[in-house]
Image (cartoon, rainbow, N blue to C red):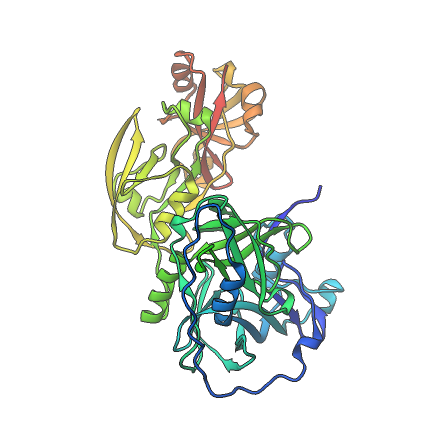
Length: 494
């Protein structure tokens, strides 16, 4: 079965003229590299009148946007060497990996692969200050030893990478120039689904290419990008557009084009942009300190479904349910526990797990946040002092699981864990699933799962299950341990 994948939209070439793919694909357009002009003295961009406000129902003036702000969009070319093998190769080899920002060896497999190979790549970027500050994607400049910025007037400058933030996929560059044209920044929070947008970049190396579309969705949480609430559009974005600006109908930059959803490696109608307010927070930190910091809550969370919400006593599936709490993390220190449902952060409603992940990741370590949570069938407030994010920052969990033996309605055969099994799994209690059928099978449970709790009550014997099921609930929420992860699984019983 063919699987769509989310892919970064930079393109690249490995040394030896071998086409190599960031997973978005790679194409060499040799005529683009002929007769490169030398860098000339800086010249200020001509002053252009601000774009007029767009009357309701009017078509956006894309021509005016391109004329006024196109000169601030740049091409970014990179050269360097990249080690093939290890984590990158393993990740790229997984066909199911949704976000591949690695290079694959082509062709010939392992036999022809060198430990390290030169590469060239190209993406896009845009100027945010007249003295040469430029934003692009972190994956565009990854492993680059030389970075060159090419302006719309064909001047070229060597660029210094001031810093990168892999969590948000933002990089900040600096070129030595003055009086440069700049973009105008907007507020992505004002965007609405259906609003027109314009992307400018260098797809396949074709610089100053403009494509238009509409906002398809907001606040998208993509696999591997829990820190970013992406803007989804249908603007035609292709390899090489990475790091380029996304404009609203008034000519304000509202996003940075970063990902595409594609089976072929090219445009298929779905592209994703990083909201520019997220990028500017990262920019400010990098300019000030050379790096960006993100906060950590110390939990794993998952989306609510209607059956899972009902099992917790909620009328609708809004919120992020905590499936696991780091015993030494900020959440545990604040008293949060598995089974709590985060309803809002500082009054901002949390409708999905990804929204909580992005909100926490954009905060600063040490910041105090008031969380409204749902626990024991009622709402309450908890104040959390956030920690510093590392590789174990807030992550989304997926849902699968169930249990039974003494409770036939669940359709599970269970037994207590031995002392050695508890020690190996590093859990204090639970029942091992030895057989699955009925409701449990439909919910996705499998042999080897460990049922740790039912509706928030710890499970270490069958009697606990019988007691909960004796109330004849329409569904139950099971906390399941599976392959080192804890996750909630809703099991409809009616």
